Structures are given as structure tokens and as C-alpha cells.
Length: 109
Image 1 (cartoon, rainbow, N blue to C red):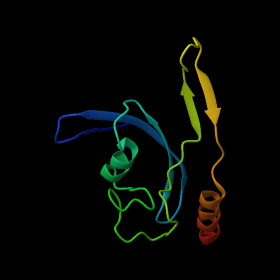
Image 2: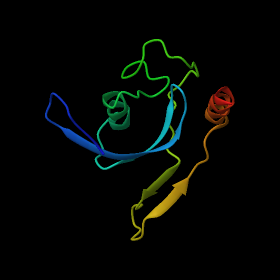
Image 3: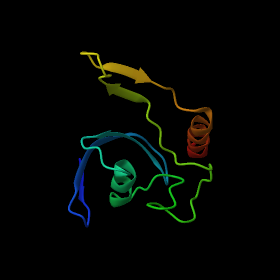
């Protein structure tokens, strides 16, 4: 679990687990427990594993250039207005991010 308090005193918490590790990168799954702005980005930076492509909370000169953050919400569970039961939505990893993972896997071989 990652817990961070900002200068404004706003605490944020996330649960996370390692999905896959590479020489210089790690694929993590995060479950935010609070809904703070940039929460996952800040927690990754605090843990010493900033998100690839994040020039604010991460490295200024990333080792992998993809033109975006390597950050993807693959599953979202919410209760929509006028509905009583939560609904779950899923989205596969975009091709550009999948390509980065495949390149990392090949580099490990």
C-alpha cells in the first residue's frame, strides 16, 4: 500500500501489486482507495518507480519515448446515476502500450 500526504495535508492511499518486472521497468496494477488528482502518478514517483512518459512526476528524460503516459484504466466499476447496482467497464491495453511491453519482454530474452 502507498500512502502519501501532500503539503496541503491531503492524504491519498492506493493498493498496488507487481504484474511483471523487467531490468529497468515494472508493470504495476493500482487500486486507488482515495480519489486525489494525479494520485497514481504521485504514488509511483514516491515509490521510486515513476510512470514512463510522466515528465512532471517522473524522469525528465525517459528511457522509453511513447508520447504519452504509460497509464491505462483497464477496469472501472461505478454506480451510474439512477442505477442501484454498480456496473463494470473494461478496456484492453492500447496497441501502443502493448507494443512497449512486447519490446521489454524481447529485450529480456
